[in-house]
Length: 448
Ligand SMILES: Nc1ncnc2c1ncn2[C@@H]1O[C@H](COP(=O)(O)OP(=O)(O)OP(=O)(O)O)[C@@H](O)[C@H]1O
Image 1 (cartoon, rainbow, N blue to C red):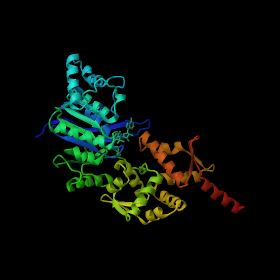
Image 2 (spheres, rainbow, N blue to C red):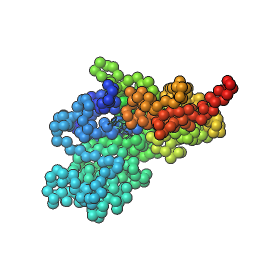
Image 3 (cartoon, rainbow, N blue to C red):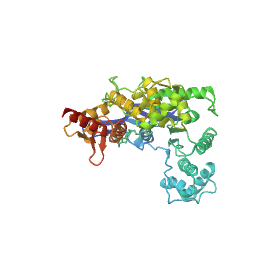
């Protein structure tokens, strides 16, 4: 049986709130990292990928549960991991060599040995000759090579990476990915396991021996499976695309029953998974929704979401909120990774702007509780205005502070577009839209 390097036992992360409620980011989760595997962690934005990763590294202490390093509680163990960050996180005032030496210096290694090891790893990652350069003199790809060198120089048993290629252009990312894979497969680096957080499905399927997909609200493992395709993996093979499609389906059906939902000992759903009163509004702009529906109509009303993302040159993570939003509004339906336009969606895509707004308004009031409530609250007040704080307080019972703000931003955006209401940013109050005002004035005059 392969040996477990890191084992998380019912780890949870939550944040205290001023009120009694707490924000549950990760519900109780079991997860082990074994020697010899590359694990990819996928999931929608905000599902807690980085949070879970940080707990596995020992960088962040779980709110409950325990992480073990070779079966010793991680806080008391001698942990040997490194992390590569999306932002490179280099010291700008140090040269490439000094950046790479930094972690060895921190471990108290003697200067001669430090230099020798750093020069060797710089050579391994293709940075030979750049040791005296400063980060600002390097391209993004070269900077991330420094990031890799600095992570690898300590010969980590587990190499963690948080979206390491997403700040790079496509070709540079592809190049670095395959070089990393080569170092791993040829065992040029003594690393026993690699754990990569990514939002890129293809990247996960290209690299990983095992893929874990997280769901959100709160973060939990939806599926965890092995990838047995042999290397080098070819994106064009049927096996590759089938796997990508499968993951796609998991991600686009967030409400389908996840195969491995962590439960509390009583067998009940994990704490923190309160029944939501409000749907989570996907952070999509009406213009994006219109664009997607028009493209879909152009594709005879139905297409694979993965292909749509490709056609739009969108990252899947950027397209999903738009698909979610259109689905929430009843403009399209999603089955097994295919998006199909509804009759209202088709009418929307075919209409000119005023009719589009009208259709959006009807759909928003019908399907989105928060928007309906804002409109009702304005109508119910004699001064026809209601403070943002009122809704803020209701939403933050359910969402984190950051998410509450984003939910309100999206609601304001949709409400303004649909002319359901307007927002006075200086007073932070929802007010009547010009349309609502005109209608009321008209009714008033008629009554006179
Ligand atoms: N200090 C905090 N207090 C409250 N909530 C927090 C705090 N830190 C993080 N969160 C919430 O935890 C959730 C998970 O965040 P995390 O960054 O782990 O997600 P992620 O899946 O890595 O997201 P992304 O893909 O966007 O980077 C988010 O909803 C975030 O708002």
